[in-house]
Structure formats: C-alpha cells, structure tokens
Length: 418
Image (cartoon, rainbow, N blue to C red; front, side, top):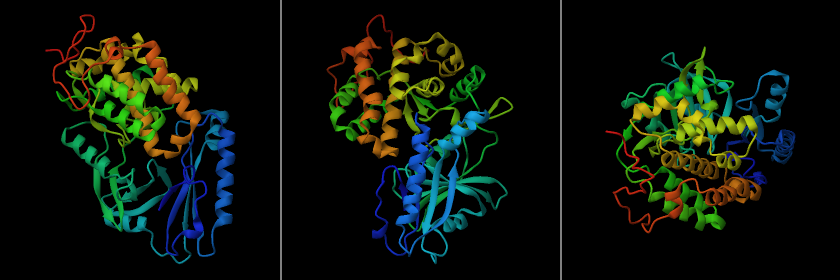
C-alpha cells in the first residue's frame, strides 16, 4: 500500500492485515509556512512510530529534499524544513518486498536509495540496470492515479516521433498487483533558476513535439475534471469549459507535458539535456500552454505567489513572453495572437488545479486553497475578461461540437499559417 500522510492523517494501522507492507509519508512541501510543515511532518512521524502494533515496525526512513531549494545557508535550511519523508512499514519477517520483485523483473542489478515519493502514490527509486545504464523505477498499485503505464506509453510515443530530450523507456509491466515502469536516467541536474537562455532552449525543444489538426481538448477535460472534484464550483467550471470549447475549433493540438517548471528540466553547463516527469502529459494540448506554465511558475516561485495570484497576473501577455518563446511559434508555424495566448493561460491554470486535485485529494476540502486558486481565478477571469470572444460564450455546447472556427474581425482565426 502507498499512503499519503496528509490525505490519511488518522490512518488506522490496527486494521491492517498481518502481512501488509506499507509506504507512508509526506511529499516535499512548497508551503509558505515551512516551520509549520516541518513540525507537522515530525509529529506525524512520531505518532506513526507510537501507533504501530507489535506485528509491524519501521523498516526504513527516507528523507526527501525539497526540489528547487535555494542555494546558501538560508536556502539549505529552508530545504530541510520543506523536506518530505517516506517511511517503509512492514512485519519483521515480511521477506522480499514487492519492490524487490519489480527490481528482478525489470532487470535491475541494485537499487540506489533513498526511495522517493511521486505523485499519485508512486514510489520512485534509482537503479543500476543489468545493461549498465542507470534507470528510474516507478512503482505503484495497478490502476491507481499514479499508475506509470500511461507515462510509459507517452514516452514510447515520444520516442517513436523522434522527440529529443525525453527519457526512453527500459520496460514496464505488472508484478504482484503493482504496476511498474523503468526509464533511462538522463544526464544533467536541475537548474537553480530559469534564465532567458533556458526558456529559449525549452522553446526550441517543445517546438519539436508532435502537432496535429485535431481539436485541443485537454483544457476542457481538465476543467470538467476539476468540476467533478469541486461541487461548490462545478457550475462555474462547466460554464467556463463550455465557453472555452467554442474557441478551440481551428487551433491545432500539440503534445503537452503538463508539469513544466525548473524542477522538471535538466541542464549541464548551461545546456538543456533533458525534460522529465511527463506524468501529466496529454496528446491534445493547447499550443504554448507548457511554456506559459514554465514562465508563470518561475515568476510564481520567485515572488512566492499562490497559483491563483500568478494566473491573474496574465504573464503570457507580456512582450517578454512572446520574445522568449519566438522559436516555438516559428517551429509550429502558429501566430501567437492574444486570443490564443489567453486560451493557453487558461489551459495552464486548468491543468494545474485538475492534477493537484487528483494527486492531492485533501485539497478538495482545503477551503483556503480552493478560495485562492479556484474561486479567485473564476471571479478574476470574469472581471478582467482576458478574451472577448471567450467572455461572450456560445450557444454551442460541449456535446454539440462544430468544426468551423468563427471569431470577430478583431480576433482573426488562430489556425496554423499556410
């Protein structure tokens, strides 16, 4: 089992079967209150130890450094406070772990601790493969939200399309009810900051992702997914999805990464060497949404803003954004008009809230998070009205899709240039 401590704060250990193997813990936290987060983490760890019945014990504790921690003494201290923890709990005579069975089937000679906690209940661990390559194993219960099968399919599709800088799969399968995948580790390290040159390199790399003339449905699916998770805001989210749908005809689809920020880029001596963690990928994304996310998330982290505030700053409208991403639009042969950029910005936000709600279900009842990042954006989009045609809405519903793309004269068609 994989249990998120934040979601299952009062997990009933006494009800577990005698032969259970449990991975318990907290992901690294980007909270604005690192002291509070660190205290909660340590108190929960102590409570876990005290609550364990005699038939279970703590087999190992893995400390997870916070990603994107700043340099210097202050950054080091903040990284420790925001760190996560993964705890292996098992019977004393549990024998081999499911992870050990995966290691054998995947052709890994040895694991390289510590274990890491991925989103959706996934356990990640680096391994030295029999082929001599260094790989990353992803393991979780088959069918869980973090099942790596979909990710492996995405990486295989990218490899077939000749997309550079994405990891290559080394294998995947199911063992003892656990779904696993193995991918080759790429060279490089995560950058300390996002520079204009790094944005330019990312723009060139993303300009080589697959593109098609199909409708980019990803943002509508994300809005509807968020609506299903947030009943109080469901009507407004569905209404926005319906209006957005009427603006998508004629816009090409691109392969979306879905979680593009500095922590998912690898660099070596200033050169971009890898783009990792394609868990939120979608084959029908909106052009530019990933790059909006990269620049918007960088500004958000630098200014310590919640997602909602960062979105309402409309960073995609800045002239610096189109200048930094010019190579991307040229490669796609698409004109980055304001209407398209507004849709890309909404797509960024929709993807962020949907996947946060899926990966961290406790956010659904976190009134402050919902108010800052969902309600505030819905209200702000209506008040600021970033896209005139989107604001007006349409009589067309999601179930009555039309293939033609119509717009006001001031909002010329956003189709690919011929």
